Image (cartoon, rainbow, N blue to C red; front, top):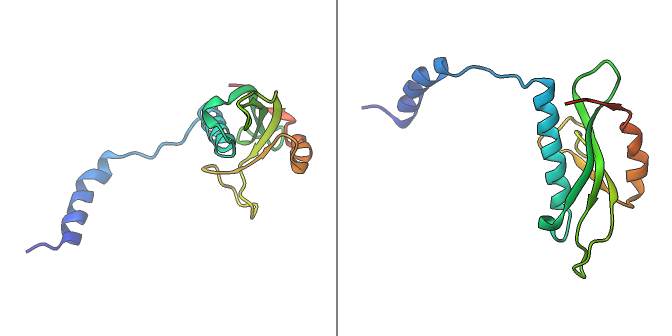
Length: 129
């Protein structure tokens, strides 16, 4: 009689050969990090469905790289009174609070937060899509 583990391992024998590793192209990575950045901004807003994004661009850390490490742009969303507050800058970096690379979450800096202006220095080398 087979155990659950043996059955799962037997299934993997048939599944693994049919799967292939896939590395995203630089253009696909730009799309991925833009989506992650916009989601991170939305998570921090009072009314995430109301947000509009402008001038959103992915950036690399240095000129020779094609790996996006920051996303910069502007957003406008409704405030607590239901009105739009005007465009504000945002910077999303692909690092967590311990400075480890984290493309799944990253860290977002919004509007007038003290670090947002300082993080804008990361927006030097755009990656064209």
